[in-house]
Length: 127
Image 1 (tube, rainbow, N blue to C red):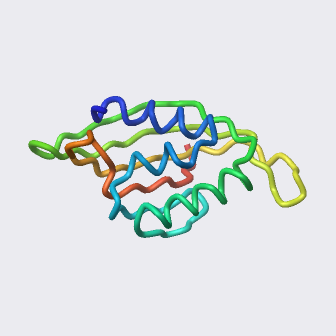
Image 2 (cartoon, rainbow, N blue to C red):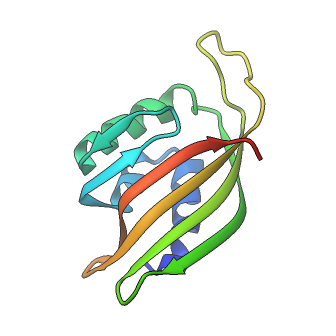
């Protein structure tokens, strides 16, 4: 996978609610700040967090891809900024929570198995 393909792969995993596919986008020793504010270290913990979030608050969430910006940081490293809009979020009582903007920021590195995130932040935004 190339850095340019990362946002598409992330969106596909999210839409499919495939926590395994999403976790595979990150290195074994990656760090992640999730959309719910959970800070997790390591792919195993990231996978558990993604499974919980995708079966809870984001169980019916739809993701629309917005603007993307890729900043190469030298050979084998890049920082990705990817905007998304999420809708279909549900609270504990199953009520729709409306739409939110989100920003994915990933520090990507080239690995033998392809480009992976070593740090990923998925945060709500105002716009």
